[in-house]
Image 1 (cartoon, rainbow, N blue to C red):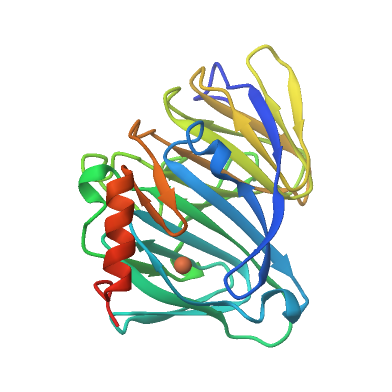
Image 2 (cartoon, rainbow, N blue to C red; image 1 turned 135 degrees about the vertical axis):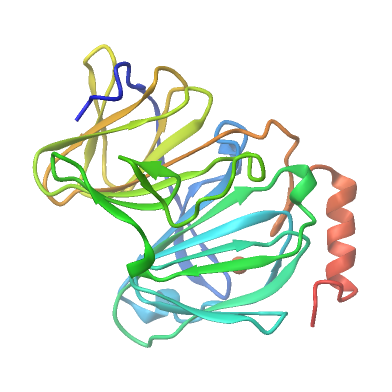
Length: 292
Ligand code: FE2
């Protein structure tokens, strides 16, 4: 269905993730790393985890702080419990999303609640504009059956975590006036040889991440560029949208947002605008102003 996209974006670059461990030793692939933060503003990080070996995930992410941005955890398979310094807690499981606005600071843990089986999912870090970095922290736990889905006329199943697609509003629907990053977060499931189109403002930075099969980006010139399994395809800022083609079984995330254009200062789990603000974050954490 290319009805709404006449001039689709081409593929700018392919990025292979970097294998690493985080938390208490959870094995993961850091797909969007620090060197992509400017290019993919407002997105700061994308981690992909997937293993059926409890040694890779069992240790989880014990108590740690965040300040100045949002974490979006999308669980494809598995169960993870989160608890934070305000006493809030929730269980994230198969197909569900936790959208956390860290704001001025939380200390939380993210711990697997399973001793065997597959644990698979993603964590995306989304920046907050300077005037919201010190907002009151909040969470939204979205169970799988609360994530809106749409089937396109070609039969592509679209899970809409945030933003809008094919006339359907996502689970996170916030006014752009309040959240200028205007995030689009789609999970696409292809069940045949199908194409999928999504209108996108050319100013929004956008990428796809393929986690089953492969897909192709169909550019305006008619060129088909492959995005292989476990690669991030960064899309050019041009045209009026994106058109993807894949065959049965392929699955991919399509993520886009409006850049903030502000300085990014990061020290581990703190992302602010200046070095002074980072030093303040460290001091506030060390002196217990994040809770506990
Ligand atoms: Fe965290």
